[in-house]
Picture 1 (spheres, rainbow, N blue to C red):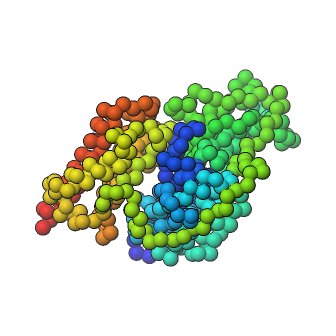
Picture 2 (picture 1 turned 120 degrees about the vertical axis):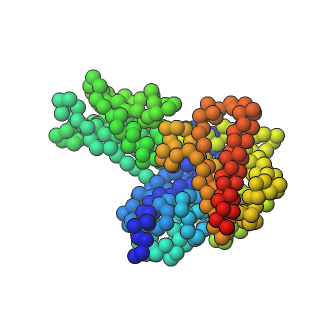
Picture 3 (picture 1 turned 30 degrees about the horizontal axis):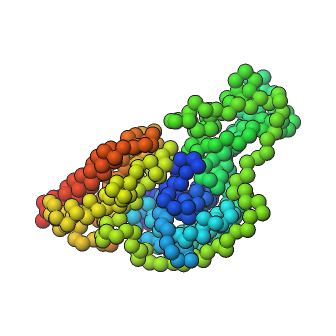
Length: 405
């Protein structure tokens, strides 16, 4: 196939934001917050199952944004155009999603992911039979994602220990240390579950900290800033076996609301905000919570940037509108800490103009807002810098176009 070497292996599903602070909303409302947190375990499970099939396409990942709406049904929009960064999906979420049981919400997430992949399949040359096999694998493991480290022997090689990780319905992982007799393989000790991060890369990083220290086993569930000094210790001599963590099955006798229907709509048929032509999606990396940047003048950070961009474009600054040519502008703004950004690329800006819109991805250093309690002058400064960065990139593109003429 011509250009086959340029294709990526499609192997990653993500709902944005994919992380946030414990016991706090990751989004602006309970419904989308519940959806993205449940999506952490289901999307990890689906991603793991995808890797078996090795689908190839223009992008290695599919990213969903989610927005609250007043309809009773969940609306799914999928872009089947070809993108360089990631495949795009949009989900509009009714309030009832917050009232679903963890299992029903996980099933809803699975149906959304699978529906999007099925819609993409004929446009990417993927086998629908293979796509169905992916779904079957996820259902077979009850929509959970579990990963275990290799066993590690103690100094006298009488016992071995490992770490087991799961992703819970609250969006965070749970880490458990298990110890067994080396010869009989009898399980003799299991630690209580400890909160961990929610991605496979973080599970592997945590597993590397597993070690035997003076007869006990120690593990750092969340390596790196700010939790890297917190560890779990298990003494196998005590032979304590704590219950395995419940993941997604914590609803008890709760009666779930009816799982809403999923309806399809053309991608881009929605209106994200009241500013014509400009949409800003704002995401946060691991260790940051969605509400760490306060509103300015009662307006959210992303919307404020969109309004400022609209004013600047309205003045036709630098002749930018000649290059934009009336197309809608979609800006994906992400804030990541320095020790996390490498998972997404490098700080900077990427831009692409398609027949339908201008796609802009901006990765910014989140160190200024990592501790919370950010004061308004810092927010305004960051907003101004983001707008200037985007405007400068648009101006550069416009100048290059004019030179080619």
